[in-house]
Image (cartoon, rainbow, N blue to C red; front, side, top):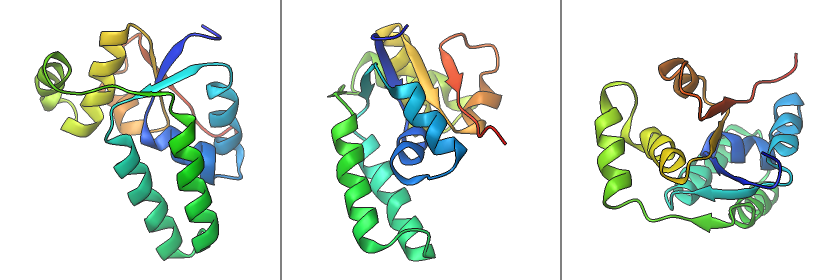
Length: 138
């Protein structure tokens, strides 16, 4: 699938821009060479996660701000979530929260992989062939 479109979720994007460990390495390597798509809510989710990392002392203010800008640039296309995508996410509500389901619904709509580091998504949809989970090597 190298060179094709993938849907990236906030967990993967945060790992790619803010993790110096093996998870960050895996996220960056997995995303390299792909066109990256996401629902527009990714910016809010990434910003919130980075804010939490700054407040915990995991990142400095400057690194958090730079990571947010980098994450913003890493997403090539933000797809609207109204209509069919939102309707499909609503159908998935019994397995997962609505925000996470939007990423799956978008991947289904685009017929491409969802790249996630979120174990809840992986566990909820073990048999879903569009979901690719990244984990640390260690």
